Image (tube, one colour):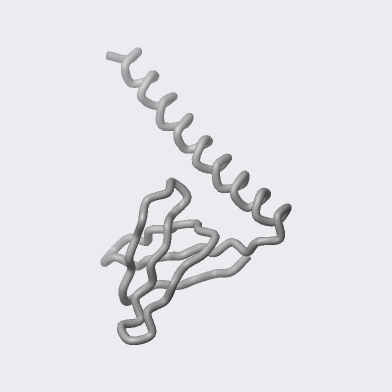
Length: 86
């Protein structure tokens, strides 16, 4: 049982480090190519979700934004978001 716990902890640490590396790589490549990076924070009840993207499109009528996150997943966010440009 202890071995399983250690393996799971190592797995989650590896995922966490990989996500940090992915974001750093995304920011580095964008700065090298002269592009802008946007961090989008979405407030959902008691938690905050953070996404990183190179571009987004805002609908002027509804105020919703559409973008692809750092994993290539298409997202649509309406209400209660914050965009930070790097």
